[in-house]
Image (cartoon, rainbow, N blue to C red; front, top):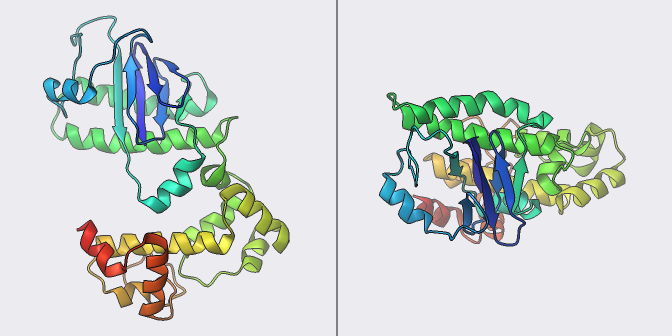
Length: 280
């Protein structure tokens, strides 16, 4: 997913299977696709290869194309990309339009304004540590842009929209906080103050899978992060614990290593050992 904002001027964002978006100063955009997209002063402008422009401009430093730092009418765009594993991509991207504009004058965009001011300052001055600050601010921009989408009148469907649902959102938070716990649909429905059948139907309608199927996928995703970021054994990651597994040494609720390996391969297509080997 690409994320960006117009710090000065205006431009058009174009992407396949999507209507062109006109962006003005303060507007933010998301491109929820791995496909190429374009940014231009006008729709009639002949596109050029962006990678060539970036390489010629000295990326990752600020790149100027047909303009100078002092040009009063220049357009300034900041952008970045966030990559997801297959499980997260299926939950997040499948229910988003290809391109999304978050208008500067919308109520959800208010939280983005101070962030855009900071980004503008960081890109205007080459201070020590600027690359790291830019990277972190762009990640925050991405999170704030998603929050703005959730809070907007055009709330997305699927997993992202479900996070803001007053009943399903808290249930998702419980699953995310304790994926190693042996949750039942009845327990989750009780937490959401709903009947079991009503909760299960609403959960599947919003997210596209049952609560326990979602838990199985989320559990594997969390376990995959543990395998990728630590040197813990597969057994240590798999073992059954009811305490929150984000703490070091906690497991993800599987009674045996073989049960964990089978579930892991069902979701990712790879064994835990192979997965760890590939990501390293």
